[in-house]
Image (cartoon, rainbow over all chains, first blue to last red):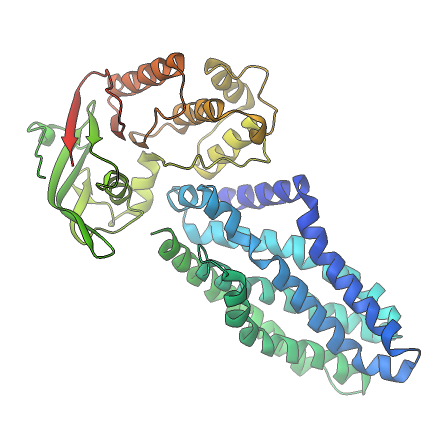
Amino acid sequence: MNAMFAIITRDLLLVMRRKSEVLTALFFFVVVTSLFPLGIGADPALLRKIAPGVIWVAALLSTLLGLHRMFAADYQDGTLEQLVLSPQPLVLLVAGKIIAHWLVCGLPLVILAPIIGIQFDLDVDSLYVLMASLLLGTPVLSLLGSIGAALTLGLRGGSVLMSLLILPLYVPVLIFGAGAVYANSVGLNISGHISLLGALLILALAFVPWVSAAAIKIAIE
Amino acid sequence: MTATISPTSSKTALALEARELTCVRGERQLFSGLNLSISAGECLHVRGENGVGKTSLLRILTGLSKPESGEVLWGNQSIAHDTLAYHRDLLFLGHRDALKEDLSAVENLQMYAALDDVVLPLEKALATLWRFGLRGRENLPVHCLSAGQKRRLLMARMVTRQAKLWILDEPFNALDFKAVNALQDLIAEHLADDGLVVLTSHQMVSLPNVRVIEL
């Protein structure tokens, strides 16, 4: 467990030393979601209707932007070999890296979402649902993304291939995430959507670190 | 292609042994039927031309790559049997320095100590860095260090890691005359302390208990 915290603090420290890469992804999220209301114009009813989809798609794409960084730097400078050879289970270290990625790329989206939501004239209730759906959904994005990042290690043009691999897996998260906010806005019960997102998160937590660790071992060999 | 060395390896449990290793890279067979064994206090110097499979052999010994056939034993047990226990005893330094360029020398050492489950107080980390001539550069980001200074930082890691078996790929690269001697002393010290060393190098090394294997 100590090793997992060590890798989380190391990754966060590295991000603090090189902020620009992470800020690019966040900036992308803010810019895309802010351009939609400007481009569509002042039609509150329409904005409210498209808000969940636009915010969720932007969150998904901005996560994708930062994904290739998850293992690539460690792979290039040989640190990943040392992680594989460390006397700690690789699964723990991979889980640590995924958590660090979510803290940097996922959590800020959850925190920014209410501010973005105001631009789409969402009411307070919808903002809460939006935050809840992002809070459950963005960890799934980081987890599933780690599989793609690990599988495409060392490949030329790996990020395009990674998008192709990962985007189909992201679709259920997008559907239930955006669906929850939409259902709330038309007065339906949202517990179904939220439960399904929670189930996706639990499933991903249970399996993905092992899959990614196996993919890393293959890439190292 | 075959080298069987050290007939006295059965004396102690701390022995690295490889049986009938075959390594294939792509279409080419690099070596086959390779046997080797070293026990505590011995050093194995792997030599050979470029591309003959020295690094591949070292990676097989660490368990990073799987051999086409054959097995590697640590203390009479296959390394695949208890990987974590083997990793606890193992230090591998490859071609790439595996240092984080944005972190300082001390931070790199402490990060590895945490990952390797070794207790390393700050004073000890600093003292080790000073021992290898990095006084005054402890808090510089590693990308400000020269290639030789990075290797010195790796020497500090070798000491703080407290591993029994060192597998070193070209450890003498980029080192000046003084640092080569320092590294040789360090390896000799490790051997005297009943450690095991496997290394590749194109230079002649002057170490006690060296066995040479030509690939």
